[in-house]
Length: 135
Figure 1: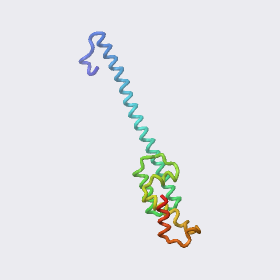
Figure 2: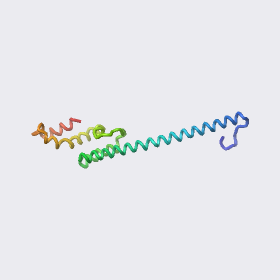
Figure 3: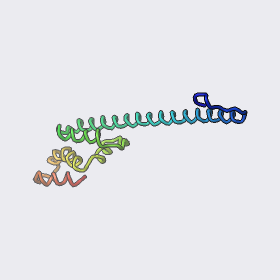
């Protein structure tokens, strides 16, 4: 095995050399297979991450976030999120940091609170406090 300058002379030595070559071939194939499997899992993880970022963009557009809040919300999912299991908008909201979640909740519910009889006459600061404390 190698350059041919050292090799088995007796039958037993030649058999050992053949087994070393066979085992080496299988081991090399195993290592290449593991590398391929690892690269494939990276590709699947990237696809899940891209799906989650698209979902965050859709949610921020559907919710009509202002530009700054949309940028913070989507950037968080582009950069910080490693868990790619979120499939619903509620799951997305659970994963963002509290500050972003509070701003999003304020954006989503502050206008609707004006139409609710319970909040008629309440100050804007009180309504903000309610939306921010609900997260």
